[in-house]
Length: 312
Length: 157
Image 1: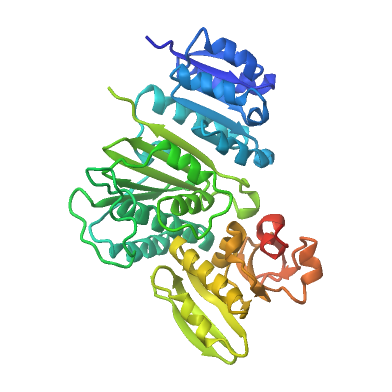
Image 2: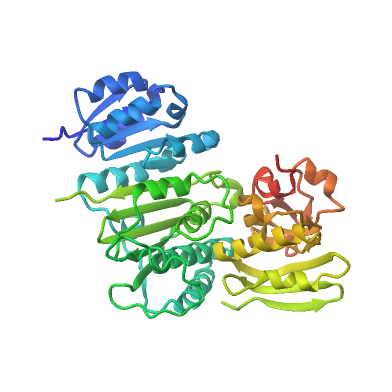
């Protein structure tokens, strides 16, 4: 049976204590290591559910060995904490292909993000944008039953966001993210019995009727901290490796169809992108746009999470 | 979402609305005059990944056909793409663009036009031009990171 533990690897003692205090509330055993080598040794005694490592660890020569060990020990999530001034580490972190969660934040904000991630894993309850919003926040639900509804829907969301007092920048980001995620769910998510993405090359302006299985659900809401946009398809065909390689794209080029370009643009157009995957059943993508800060105070890179539903 | 509208205005083409899968930007090149195409982008409200792809194809074709594109009054939504996706820049020349400013005194946020030619020296040093608030006449501060927002003006390596 899995040891109920979380492993923190961070060279800074103060950060170790802060993160330990935050994650200690889960009731899980929290182990601390100063570096990746020590972390590897600890993992050989306790197989942690979650490992939390400092962003600079990606530059360590032991990074590959550490993440391989975590994977071999069945660790479900590898989270990297990155201070806003360490954005240059992001490309390396993404190319490791093993970091399923990246949180770019100042420490006071970190607590809620860390806690949500830990609770999602511990309680095996991954889905729903409501986990990221304050209690009582209304989520508006739209069901896309024809592909031609996308354009009007995303435009109306942008108008509604503006009407609720948010800036033109936030409305514009919401419109772009909603457009990309719905387009992805309609055209890239559907697969046939052989696993082929049969609709990905279809012209996006072709109107398609979407039956119950193919309909796409969009929910959005704002709690004055985050504007959340959640898009769900019922195929569950998006996988972790595709996501991480899409996020790793440092430049989006004219590379044909597929989910990559839309995901890359969505990631760069929001503050936090969350992927909840139930393979073969559904994919839910949640984009969080932080509405508290002007562009001049936004983090230079965005956070992400990739969660995969465990088999019961 | 309004489809892309194209209106001639003097020697320029004024684009307004959304650049998406229906935009058909390649057709714009047939309207170049003397190897030159001037696009006024003040009215562009939206561009998605399919619009970006179309835009890149237009830029590549313009380079191949030796058509010099001038972009003026470039809306913020386009600037974000020019900054994120290097291939969108092509060989086009940006002569003016909108940028976010905020007033420290009254809190007003505004997208203001910057003349990229007149301010070229300052912009090369990542210094945003000073602006005055249209509401309270107070000084407005640039409301983004200059190194991020002006990166489209920098030479690509």
